[in-house]
Length: 282
Image 1: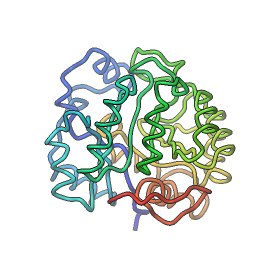
Image 2: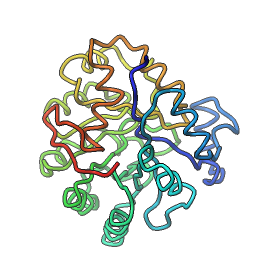
Image 3: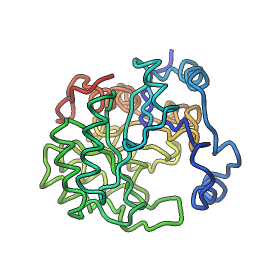
Image 4: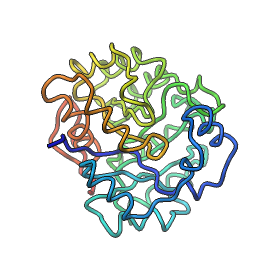
């Protein structure tokens, strides 16, 4: 029996995003994909894949200002299998905080996401700080993309060292570096050792290409720090979870990577790795 998983980044509505040029370039140049990149999935399609691959839960993302009914339907129909995250633009100031709080009041929200390359501001910019404070208040983890992005967009803003002072000044904030940290894996690992509430999610990064030194970190001091995610269909659930299960990990580490770390950080599972559990729904 395969080790069960939680997939912390699944897209079910790529077809509703249109065909922006930057995504077309990512699909073609980075992931070598065509129309299958821009697909909208039904609840049954995603559930069938999750059941076949032994993925217990998936986290979907929407805009809290204009929540997509198609995305909300997944969590409404199967609250035990689907949870929600919201994508924020911190430049909206108090409007963004009100959107976040309102959404959290009415939905099974388990995380907040910010993508620095989309606004070309590093996460230690003061414009982010109100969002950090609100996430602490709500008990919400936040994911911040790190590493050079695939789209033709600014990359320096996603340098992991920008999180150093964030973690220092917001020690209660549970922060997850998303989409890996390529090419700064070593810096990301060192920061995770330094800060108990800092983690990394391997969304949109093929597990088979994780650097050997980072896999060693996962096997040792990072066993409670690294969280699985696919970014399906950009990187399909099938490919991502298959490659994850094939990694050379020590006994018990695969369970942490695929399931236990996400259960603790996002769903209030048993504590570990120095982080406090979060009483989120799901």
